[in-house]
Length: 138
Image 1 (cartoon, one colour):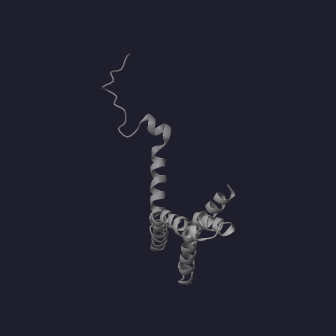
Image 2: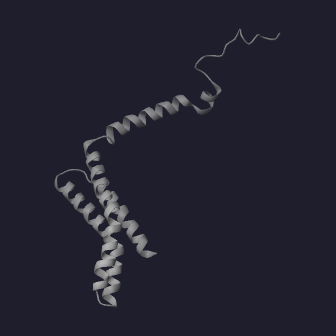
Image 3: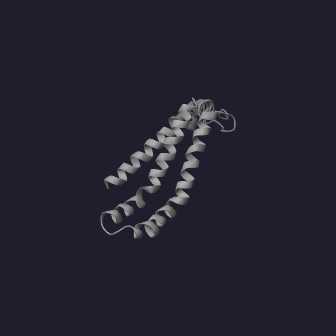
């Protein structure tokens, strides 16, 4: 009455995990996503916009602290005490975000004037603006 396990091997491509998770459907979904990404994300327009974002962020990250230090140590001491000194210190904190916003906005305007899509650069500009306004509210 007992069967010998060696006589009835399970099917090679079927497993309980496959039945539970539906790996074939997951594989098909992954394949569709990869095809979509290759079609829509790996284009020249997306590449240009990504390069613009990196080209704007890298100098801001590298030179932002130096700009703040320059304004704080060189310009603020030359301003008379009171409102102008406080304005110089405030400008030191917002100089880098302002420069980044100007660069991103100029890039978006340039792309649109050339007839290229600028949605990613505009989205980056909007996120930077939102982050700046959030930081000001604190």
